[in-house]
Length: 253
Image (cartoon, helix red, strand yellow):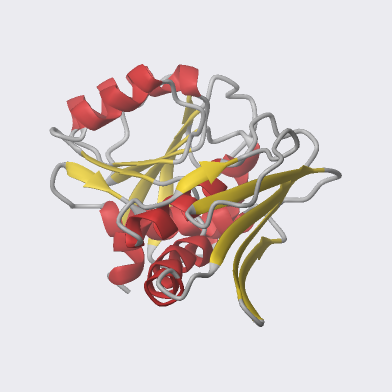
């Protein structure tokens, strides 16, 4: 039984994860951390990591960048692995995460979905076939109208998966409106759509002569990210210090 501390317990994702874990016989949430402690849960919720005195095996974090520094201090002090799902970290915070991973296991991924992370692997294999055949690569992503960043971190990660398989031969193009030139065969075009309440859609297009191959992932609920985080927590519990990602979670299945 994997014992989990949920950081950001009373936020939307924290509550989604709470429901998922409640139906998972292999793990349980033994404590939560959230500055808003008034919401009732089946486990105690503490206002800060320093106040949490419950034994656990791993932390899942879905909070905000301001909460990360204190959480990392707590994780190192208690020798607790961390599944770090919070996005928007500064360069300094990312450097600190990497430094702390020398002392405790940390899993960080641009997207916690098992489907997206499987897609990373498929894209690597596809690129090996299509790059030498002269296929152009385009990525289109769509999200809700409240999302602040564009393109999404997942779109960049998908482009990185293609580029890694191509030994770094591609450059990324985010906007062509002011260009009057043919497409560079070694560019990856990345386009963003924002509207409504789209949870998340990502499409990778390999366009060649007389044929087009498309890989598409569509999230219809944020629970896909929660499910991935729970699987990552079960994987990370008991692991030695180091940086981990979702690809290793999938490979272990």
